[in-house]
Image: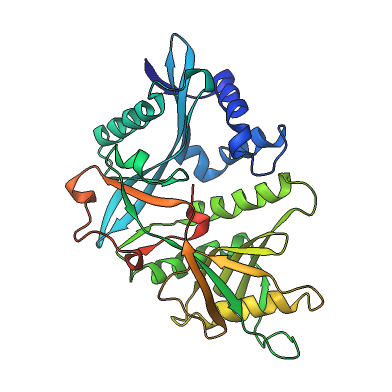
Length: 322
């Protein structure tokens, strides 16, 4: 058995087999397009790949691999993200999924990667057997307080675009400085995250999904922003940032987006919401365990958190999930 890049016919076989569990509402034709187009982005070309465990040319199992730069306890670390671990149906029951994870971890460790990260949809025990440890994370429900007349706030809010990405990088760095663990998000990674959400919305059935990318501007520069994925009446805040430590401009953006459609029912809003971001216009109404369990595995002493990470130590937006 060997680990090889999953491309060409191998990739098509994997995507066909994984459609039923990870299609996210896309059609069979749109589903492979969703993944392959991600590979064409500037960040995706350099940092995203899929691997296949094969035997005699036959695909046994596969997984996605993401390469990140991150910060842990004020030091830069190399991070590998593992996702979409999948065993081809006819080869199940032989621990090939675990084997592909172990091969990828050995490959990363040999390349000097410090830390592995994944998000489990199947609970913690399976990956705990490989050595991963869970960092509890919560999905937060939010309510945006509005003017009784449902009017827009006195804030300059406009649609975000490419010219804002450098400002978003600076805003993100300032916000992340108070956390022990976070991704080092550059322009390409932020662009990739927004493009991925827009691609999912564009390939979905008409009206099913949309993406809102809005910024608050002062002096020609973006000083706050939000990226929201909408799915019917549900808004998920994928990413947000504010030069104001209180997050008041983020709150004003949310008020403006809601006020733009005064006749519509108020959305149900959720987010992976940083503990230290508390806009005065936003109230936390609920908290529950996130369905995607964050799990880490140190591969070097440099990638070992000390003491262990608590949820409040981690800055990770929903849009950073992979």
